[in-house]
Length: 334
Image (cartoon, rainbow, N blue to C red; front, side, top):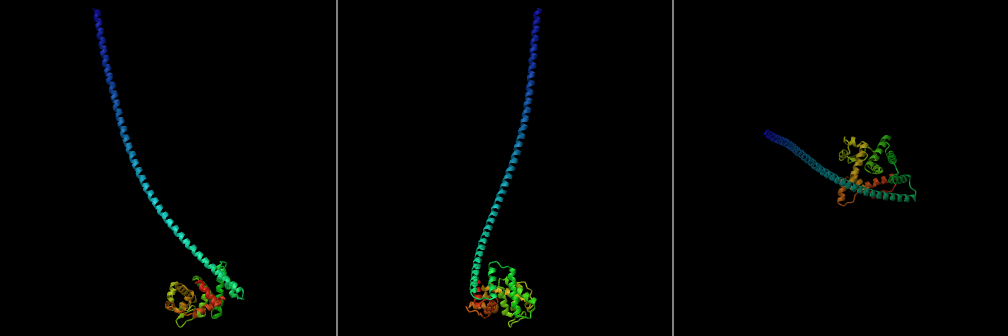
């Protein structure tokens, strides 16, 4: 009986041990499950955090992309404007080049015309040289032809030309007016040359006009109130003087000054030459008055030629040519 009791106790102990083991295993299982749940929750939280960070990062990237796109669009618009400005500038440059090209063409045409006139003039003078080489000519004639040929071919210096014309005028004035001192004569001659060159006249033509008008007398006064060397009329002189910057100080003080008188007279002749576009007509108008000459031309009346022929005779004599030769030359140059 005691043996059976012992066996029963052993069985009870075994069952109790199993129950304890089962309980402990259940607790362990529950513990592990709690740990897994906690880990899962932590993992989920981290995933959520990472997801939110990713979303923010994506938002930032999108914002930056929008800024980049806006910046690119702005740069694109600026580039378009820059290209438009370049195109406008290119058009302006092209237009400017075209204008310069047209100007160059006109300039070349003018050069060609001038060259043709120069060549024609040289040929005329060469023919005169040939003609005069067959007969005896004076020193003055030869010098005048030589001067013109050298001037046209560009071989004569301005200083040589200046000295020639001033010396010629000095000799002519000294011969006709002994009351003037040498300094005054030189200043008058120099002014004749300078003003002639200014308005593209031959200095000897201006010398011939002064010879005809006043015989080189700076104090000459005509019945029509024309004063000085060039016999400038009192009623038109103030306006002419003002046009070229000469202060008007009354007829006698202004027009008896030979330098001012020559400047005003040559300027007046240049105006007439420009208006009538004919040198011979301009010389006639200088003496007769532009309104009288214009009225005659309008009425198809013949212009008086006594005065102009007298001037051209003196001019031809100064150059050593005949009146006919000088008249032909003036016709050729008009």
